[in-house]
Amino acid sequence: MSIGKVIYYHRRKQNKTQEQLCQGICSVTHLSKIENNVKEANLKTIQLLCDRLHISIEEENKKSELVRQKLDIFYKTMERLHHEKAAHFFKDLQECKEYVHCTDMIYLYELYMLRYYLLLDDFSAFEKSSRGIHKYLSKFSPFEDYVWDLLQAIYYGKKEHFSQALLFLTKLEEQAEQYQARISDYYLFRSAIHGHLCHYSLSIHYAYKALHVFQQTNNLLRMVHVKMILAVNFIYIGEFDKGNEMLKHTLSDAEMLQDTETKALFLHNLGFLYYRQGKIEESLDYYSQALQYKEKNSASYYITISFLAEALITFSQNEKAVELLSEVLDSFQDQKSPRYIELKILY
Image (cartoon, rainbow, N blue to C red; front, top):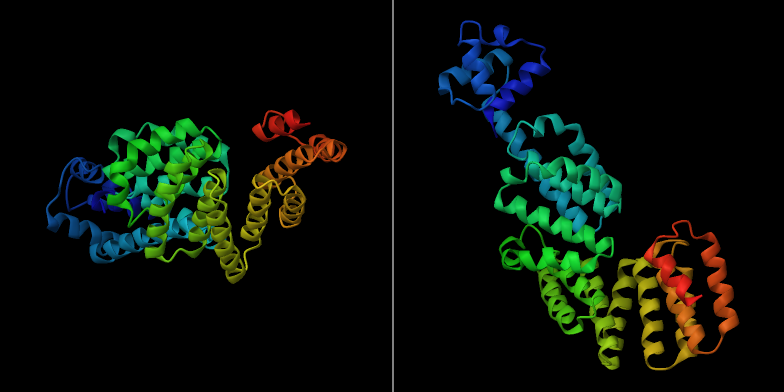
């Protein structure tokens, strides 16, 4: 906590001028230097200024520590995909933003807000805030540097610029273990990016590392996601029995968590398993079931549509594929989206 900045915060909050606050204690110039952290005042001067503002250094330290704890919990809720809790902490922390800017948590605060925008897939807010933060990069601590680069990797991954995301993740590898007690999802994102780039062995390698971290933190939902990544990789490399076994684990976990999104993903990947085995009818059935659990016109919905259309074409059901794709393409709003282009090619 910067006591000078805290004094400035409370002086402004109480509508006091510098002259009113420092009268009989120190000069205006001296107070100005204290508030801007240019000069360290002696403890007696600080105490007199705090007494006039009716604040306690001890209480301010406690308040600062409470905000720090809220920030840590805020990030953990996002790692665990607890959207409602994250929204609560986002609102709570926004209300004390002015105070946070008086502390050494100012950059961490802004970085965690960026993480929240990624949780919401609000890319415009992320991009706008990133531009504002970028000019302060030179003032970041090593941990804040790590968080910044990881958020850039997540952003590029979500935008499907996988090679760019991997550049950031590779840069961070040596620090990942050092900070995994505070940031636990590095290996998950690394595994997912390698999977998208068809680096199946590397994806499996990092998935097992991610699984170990999430087991330590008891992050059940993320464990399910990692198992799903492992299942898909096993299917791609032809290890169908391993893939099937891993999918069974995810179904059990999804039912325990009562998570329909994970169940939809399980059904989709089961359809993919049967497709890779040449069992087209079973594949079509599971893809169709998956769609029933997915939000229409969502990114996940379109992915299943493309897999279903490909299976229909493979099974020589071209008319059904055309009918399915035509209906979806007509309702698609963003015609520059990779999803739209992929579906158009299939059509």
